[in-house]
Structures are given as C-alpha cells and as structure tokens.
Image 1 (cartoon, protein in one colour):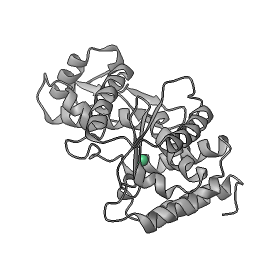
Image 2: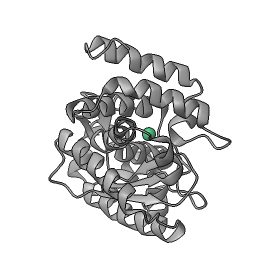
Image 3: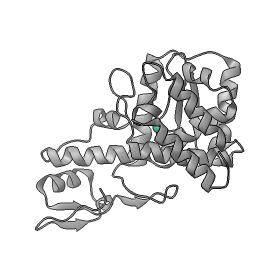
Length: 266
Ligand SMILES: [Zn+2]
C-alpha cells in the first residue's frame, strides 16, 4: 500500500498535510497519489500506510466499547478479574505502554475468544479464561492483543479500507463512523466480524511473545496454549484461529521464533 505508482498528471504529496476532504477528492479524480501516511512502526519495523488520526481511533474505540458492553454481560468474578488485571498490567508495562489507559473486562460468554480496541480496551471471554490454566497462557493471549495495539493494526486496516473505498467511490465521500466501526472489526451482529489480516495475526503473535517474555512469563508456554486452543476450539473458532487455515503453521512459527531467541528449546 505504501508504494502506489503515480498515474499521468498525478501529484506526489504528503497527505498528512492536506484536509481529508481534499485527499478524498484527489484520490477519486486520480490527481493525487499517496506517498505519505507511510511510516515505520517502531515495534515491528514495518512500513505502514495510515491515514487516520489517533483521536478518531480513540473516539471510535469508545463508541464500539460502549456497544460491546451493552450487548454482552460482564462476568462478575472478583478473583478472575484480579488475575486478568495482574497479567494485563505486567504485559502493558513490558510493552512500554504502562502510562496509557487500559481496561480489562471479562465477558460472560462461552466463546474462547478475546479482543482489543485501539483505545486499549481489552475484552476477555469466560470461555477462554477457563482454558487458561496458567498465567503464562493468559499472557500469551494478552501479549497478542496488546501487540495488535502497539503494531497499530486497526489504524492500518482502517486506512487500507478507506483507500480502497475511496478508489471505488466518487469524490466527497465521507469517512463515516460506520466505516470506522467496520475497520475496527465491529460488525452489526457479533461485534467482531472483520478479522485482522493473516499477516497482522502472525505479527501480533510474535510481538506478543516478546512482551510475555519481557514481562517474566514463559514464552515456551505459548506452544501448549495454542495446542489446547486447537483441540478445544469448538464449533466457533476463536479469532486467533479463524484467520489461520493451518494452526500448525502458527505453532511452528512460534516454536522457531522461541528457539531462535534462545528461549527454548521447545
Ligand atoms: Zn489477533
């Protein structure tokens, strides 16, 4: 996405210095080519195409979070909540993000799933909690979710979506809140319809395992955790698995990474 070629008569400009309206018009008419909005993510070292303000993402997160909390009952279990918070705090500290606001909420659902919004709101379902027999396993999940945030995956997905939409639509299109919601992966029914890309999932796995290691958890435990998920996924595969047609590959990649880092053998 960061390397779009310029059409005839196209201007190369830094879109971060333009009004969003002008960007959309320019893209739609083909007189504008995106060269900026591209930045290197400091966590992953990867170039990303991002054309959404952090403040817009924060706003959309709050909205989506309020909706989630309305739709799904929270699980009132003080001991479980303490445990989630303890592991969560250690992970965000290890990620160097202890100074930003985070919220960890347990939802009363059988789903073996968890999610994160770019504003730092983390939802963790009872079904997944019940699988996490060790704190290291919770740390695997929370590392992965925090990894989505620090790697700016939602902003990236939103920006790709917006650019694609813009290419298809006429000038004057608004980047409306519906699109923002879709980009955050919050569809109408389930709340999490649009998955992160496979590349982003793989990246979150690796970033996550680095965080769990830095937080003092055992990264080797990610392997039995994913095996347990694989065998206990049930009829509705969790977000982690659904975007990966072959969970064996994911486990293999993690094993390789752990061994390469000298944290193994596993
Ligand atoms: Zn994920």
